[in-house]
Length: 71
Image 1: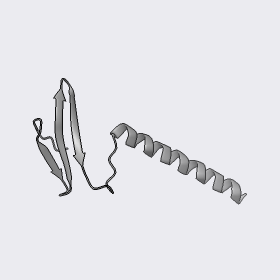
Image 2 (image 1 turned 45 degrees about the vertical axis):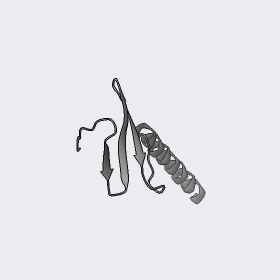
Image 3 (image 1 turned 60 degrees about the vertical axis):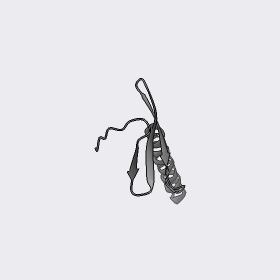
Image 4 (image 1 turned 90 degrees about the vertical axis):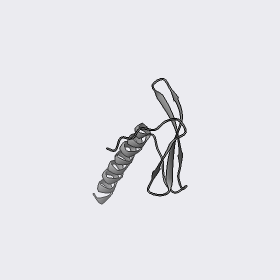
C-alpha cells in the first residue's frame, strides 16, 4: 500500500485520468472528491464488498437452478 500525506486542497493523480482531492478535514473524518471518467466505477469499500457477495449468491443460485433443470 502506498501512503501519502496531503493537505486540504491537495490532490493525487491515479492512472493519468483519476484525480483525488482532499476537500475537507474535520476531526477524524476526511472528505475527498474524485474526478474520473464515467466508465470508471467508484464504490465505498463496504458497498463494493456487498455487491461482490450478492453477485456470488446470485451465481450460486443460478448454478443450482441449472442443475435442477438438467435432472
